[in-house]
Amino acid sequence: MARIRIGAQLHPQHTTYASFADAVRRAEEIGCDTVWNWDHFFPLYGEPDGPHFEGWTLLSAMATLTTRVEVGCLVTCNSYRNPALLSNMAKTVDHISNGRLILGIGAGWFERDYQEYGYEFGTGPDRLRALKEALPIIKQRWELDPPKPMRRIPILIGGGGEKVTLRLAAEHADIWHGFGPVETFRHKNQVLDEWCAKIGRDPQEIERSVSPRSDDDLNGYVEAGATHIIFGMGEPWDFGPIEKALKWRESLG
Image (cartoon, rainbow, N blue to C red; front, side, top):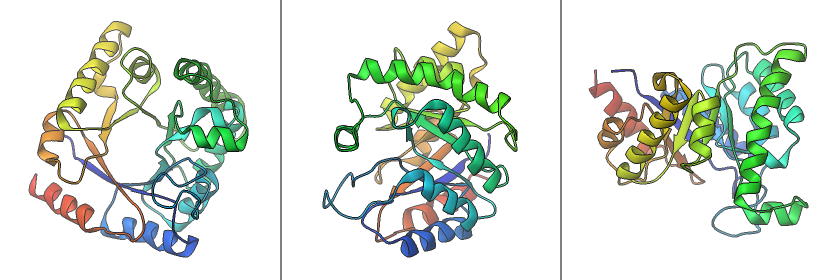
């Protein structure tokens, strides 16, 4: 069995930069493989007008605060940025991190971000079409614009839409990120495998990551196909579940 990777998604809301930076360092120190933030402009829970930091500028800091872990947004909202610009941003953070960036990306969903920052929210299909159009542009710019990325930047696609999102994951993703209970994750994982078969891609090429609920069985996720488990948390930072998961991983041998 492939080694299970453990990640921490640190919610960049209701916190200070100093506290967030300490949490990033802590995640690397205890043995996480990946550290993530998210790409929003306002808190997703708690006081809706509380403190919040922008994801990609924060990623640059995360790259310099760490030396080993991979870093990324879980996930970038595609329609907040021109895809050619996003490719350059990603490549820049890739260089800052010495080749440790993962480009996490999705179609976007948080309507308040769009409304208050002047982006067109549109419909779900609109945002998915924009993601479909953006992914080839991002990959093309990495080939064209000097300097080249430090490595072939992995793309993580988040979401469970079976008709479009999982097809895009089959076409473009190095990592697919899912949510929900074990049985939901198992089903979506199977749908992704089916899309891979339809387009002729080896499903083993796509790492499967998941954000578990705190009371979910990690063994169940692994049996359902997960190879990368990412724990989300906000301030006050409680690394207890991650430390427990790291010990659980050791017990797998």
